[in-house]
Length: 332
Length: 199
Image (cartoon, rainbow over all chains, first blue to last red; front, side, top):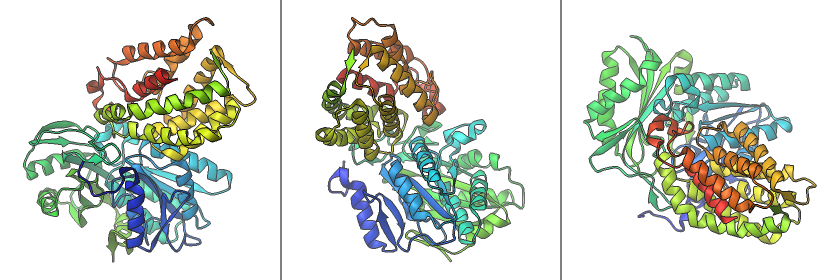
C-alpha cells in the first residue's frame, strides 16, 4: 500500500479533521466526530436534508453539505455505512423544526442504520421522510429498480432536493421532488484500476493492465462484463446504450449530464468521453443543460469514470440552476 | 449446552481473537462479491468488544446489550449492523433469564433470524448469514442434551457451507452476477463459521 496517511485506522478521522480546518463553514458533531454539519446549524423553518455513507468517495457524500444543498452527513468508515448514532446525530443537526429528509444511496448498511435512526427520532416527534438514490443501472435489472445502488447521480439529486428545500417547500414536497429527481436519473461506471482500502491495505479487486470492468460499482463490486479496454468513443456509446433507454427521451428533451472521474482518471480523459456523449445526444436532438465534467463521486484512487444523465422538466432544470455553495462545488 | 453470564463473557476474548485473525480472509472473500470491508468491520467490532470486557455486567441480558453497544459504536457497515441487531435481539430475549440450555439457544437463534430478515431484507435460501444461523438452529434442535453444543453448531455450519456453495447468491450486489457466485462460499457464512469455531 502506498498512500499518504498516518495510522490506517485514523484515515477517516484525520481526513475529517483536515477537511473541517480547510472549510470552517463545516463542523464535526457527535461523540466520535463522525457527523459533518453546517457550522451555523439548521435554518429554522427549512426542511433539513441529512445524508450519509461510507468514506472514500469525496466529494460524495459529506462534501455536498452547504448552502442550497445538504444540511448534514453521517460519515462511515471507508466503504462502510455510518453508525445509527451518527445517523441520529446528523438528523438532529439538520432539524430546523419542520422535518428532515434522509437522502442517501441505496446500500444495505446505510439503509438499516437510517431506518433505525428514523424510528428512534419519530418516537421523539420529529417528522421524517426518506428517499434512497438508485441511479446505478448495472446494480439490478429494470424490473428490480428499487434494489439498485446509488452512485454519482446522487450529486444531481442532492442539488435538486437542496434547492427545493431552500425555496421553502414542505417535507412532503421536498421528498416528492427528490424521488422525482432520482426517478429521472440513470448512471453507469467503468473501472480501469482498483483502489486500496486503507484498513486492509489490499486492492478491492484485481484487473489486468489492458482490461476494463464495465458497470463496476463504486466500491469495486463486479460489473456487467470485463474485457479489453475499448476506445473512449466506444465506451461512451456503450455507456449511453445502458443509460438512455429507461429515460425514454424524445427529440427536444433536455438533460443534465455528469461525466465523473472515479478518482485517478484525469479531466483530459473525462472531456474525451464527454465529447462523444455530447455528440450522440446532439444527434438525437437532445439538449444538454449545464454539463458537469470532473471529480464529483470517487472511489479514492480508482481509475475509471461514470456517466449520469438526468431527464429534466422545467422544475428540475430551475432547481439545478439555483445558487448553491459547498466545499467542492458552487453554482451561481 | 449451558450458557450463563460467565461462560458468555469467557467466550468474548476468543471471539475477538478469531475475528482479528480472520479479517484478511474475510476482506478477500468479500472483495470477490462486494465492497471488501467485511473483515475490517468485524476487526473493529472485536476491538471495541475487547475494550468492553472489564465492564461487562453479570447478567446475560447485560452482556449481550453491552456487546451490542460496542458493535454499534464500531461500524455501520451492513454486517456490523446485523451483528448489532442480533445482539440486541439476544439481549431482549434474555431479560430475566439466568442461563440458556440447548433449546433456549436454538429458540433465540430463530428469533434472531426473524429480526435480521425483517431488518436486512434477506430471506432464507438467499445464501447469506441467515442460512448459516438457520443451519445451527436446526442442528441444535435436532441434537441431544448429551451432545457438545459447540460441536453441533460447527458441524451444522459446515453442512450449510457445503449445501450452499454451489447455489447462487440471491441478494446484494452479487445478485447481478449470481451465476459467478456458484462454487463460492458466502463471506457472511464463512464469518459465522469462524465465530462458531471460536466460541
